[in-house]
Image (cartoon, rainbow, N blue to C red; front, top):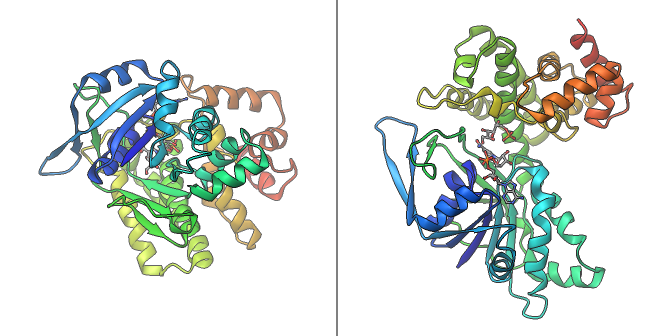
Length: 378
Ligand SMILES: NC(=O)c1ccc[n+]([C@@H]2O[C@H](COP(=O)([O-])OP(=O)(O)OC[C@H]3O[C@@H](n4cnc5c(N)ncnc54)[C@H](O)[C@@H]3O)[C@@H](O)[C@H]2O)c1
Ligand SMILES: O=P(O)(O)OC[C@@H](O)[C@@H](O)[C@H](O)[C@H](O)CO
């Protein structure tokens, strides 16, 4: 069994690659980072280290690397043959890798060799986004054929993997917790045997539970922490006021999730507590700039802040905690983050409601914008 994985970064090497290795896949990492690809080609193995006591680590092997631009032909050949194609590149990058995947799938039009394409990004239905970019390369008839033997299941992935600073640049320090949840209903043929993946029929519930708890909570810790001058999530979580505000935000998203999906109240409370203790793992140093990255993306209508606030609003519920985090995200002005710079320019150039319209895509006078504007301007 063969897998091509796009993105040999933190989640690629520290999570998806690991689980594919455990399941016996021959693995090809594809990336645009030449240094990482060269190292992957030269190394026989790297190590995953766990942020827990007692310390332990695990050796990962059985992989190679291909530069996705400089070794296009070799990559397309592997894409034409792989049983699984996965990604962890960041949702905005999916459109850039779609042409190579489309070419790999095109080469299967005669053989009809099955494959599963799974985006492992922090996004609601990331695979659907990738699928629509790939579809653009096919005629209607060709696409009908492709989708009769290629599966495009959505997935949710959860493991905190900070920016790395280990001596060996291939090694990865990860938290022990992990969850790779895949939509069982998204397969047209056999379901690939990824041993530690969790196949479910109700993925929406899992995606939103993860995005609106882990990622909403993480964003709250990061944006509030940034405003107070902290550098890491661990420092922010040591601040009692931030922990109290964070709890309120997760109470709000929890109310939404419990009502929408019928999660058990106590189980959800336990999920929140586990999440908060993951953020406080003393053996991880997770930079706020990583967790707060790409604020424009994070403030999108389908994302971790606006989406739950909108859904609560449509149920007639107030969400002051979420509104507070959104206002804090709007103040994120980290110079090293291109989107933060763009965000500040937008806010400087336009009145707040117009800027919000451009950021979220919702009408300028939307009730949610009015609530955000009131907190932002106070
Ligand atoms: N790190 C985490 O804790 C975590 C957890 C769950 C999900 N995620 C999600 O996983 C995805 C990746 O995050 P990460 O933390 O691993 O980021 P990362 O920056 O460590 O890795 C991304 C990799 O993608 C590569 N890349 C960029 N453009 C590419 C292209 N056109 N073709 C091939 N490779 C390309 C980069 O060079 C990099 O190696 C994101 O969607 C993120 O939201 C991250
Ligand atoms: O990767 P992002 O930018 O979507 O979000 C930043 C973090 O919240 C995220 O990477 C978490 O660490 C991860 O989603 C945990 O599973």
